[in-house]
Image 1 (cartoon, rainbow, N blue to C red):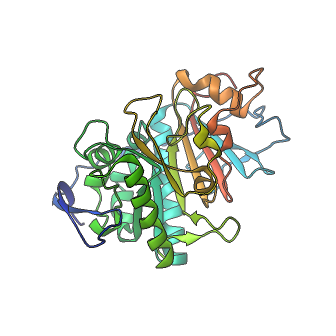
Image 2: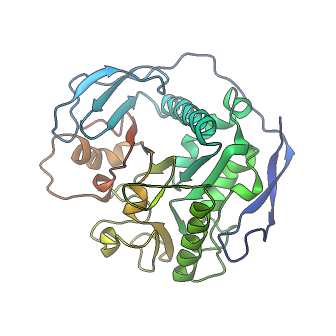
Length: 321
């Protein structure tokens, strides 16, 4: 098994583009396998977006249990009793898609967010996935990033590196971090230039529908206010429909300077996994997926990929449905 990284080496293999960071592996990760079979369940009375919903057994990409499917909107909801069970299901879902795209197109483009999402990916660095996934095919991007040094506590890169990237043998040139030496505007422009280069070279697909980059899988979380990426409620960036990557300097959540993918890019994805845990997010989940008197439209409700949207919820996040 390849070994994982504890140190970073700056690479200039892609000058002026979003520079990848070399990941050298010094020690294999300690892994453990919980042999207890975990299951997820969901009420058959579940309804999504007040549309007609059919309840069916989980697809082959879910570890177990029952999902609820909105066939009109290609929307799937899976509720797990605990966050631990959710992490198990999310790992299998991600690993299955990794295998699918690696075989179909020779690469797997994955976009991650910050927050608690990285913790929920922890099962991927354990057996059987740490050994069975072809990590050489992965290309990793960020749906948003704080414009801070990469060793700063607020950095999404640092969060992902410490909790995930340092524990798997993804090639150093396949991890695309922002250039944090630039301003927020400069970093956004630089990252968009990087994406355009990778679309041109075929690493990232291009949507035949929208013309925007089409990532294979986006793994994203949701804030208690319903924000996704760095697209916040009521902010003008929600309406941005020309840029691939834009910047924000007045984020309502610190730090104020960030870059973020726009909704046209997010919604061109083949698959999006929305991972939401905790009772503090239950009201927004209720508004987005259930019957609610709340007339507000949250950014998370604007997530509508060309492919499949799958919500991964723990029972606390789903408690008001």
